[in-house]
Length: 222
View 1 (cartoon, rainbow, N blue to C red):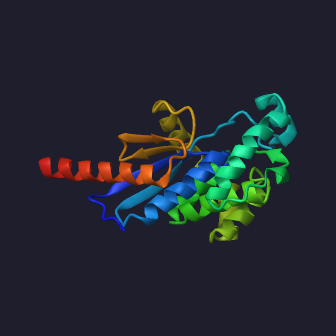
View 2 (view 1 turned 30 degrees about the vertical axis):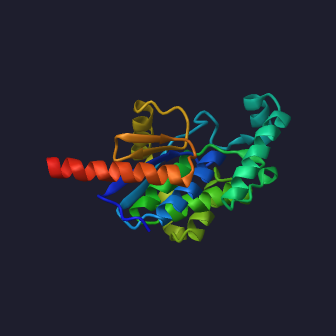
C-alpha cells in the first residue's frame, strides 16, 4: 500500500441511476485499496432527472425521450456492459422497468452518512437498481434496500416518512450546481481539485497523492 501524506476529503457527486457513477464508485474503491489511510469519502447528491415525478416513469418512455429510441440506448448499453464487466458489475438493464425520481434515495444516502453506513448504502442502491432492476423511487423498496445495507428498517421508514434531510439534501445539490457540475460522477478532492468521470484507479491514486502532498506543504508552510 502507498502511504498518504495528509488527510484528504473526497466528495463524490453522483446519481444512483447513473451507470458511470456505479463504475466510478468501483474504480474509487479499487484506488482506495492501494492507499494506506487518510482519505474520507462523502457522497453528495446530483439528480440527473429532477423533473421526473415521484412515481417515476416507464423506462421505455424515458429512453425514447432521452435518446430517441430504446435501440439508440442499446448501443450505449453495450459500452456499459463492457465497463461493468471490468469492475465486477453485472449490469442487467433489461430488468429495469421504471426510471425513478432519485430525491428520496439521496435523502437516504444523506441519512446513512450520519450512521457511518453511507458507502454501504450507496453500493446497495446501485446494486438494487442496476443489477436487480428494483424501483428505488419507491419508499418501501428504499426501506428494504436500507435494511440490506445494515440500517434499522423501522427507523428508516420513519425517517423517509418525515421531512428530515430534505433541506440539507437540496442545499448539498445546490452547492454542486454552484461548482458548475453538469455531469457525474464528479470527485472533489479537498474542496479544490476535481476529477471528472469514471477515471481509472491509477488516475485517482495519482490525484490523491498530489492533493495529499499539497495539503502537507500548505500545513507546514502555514
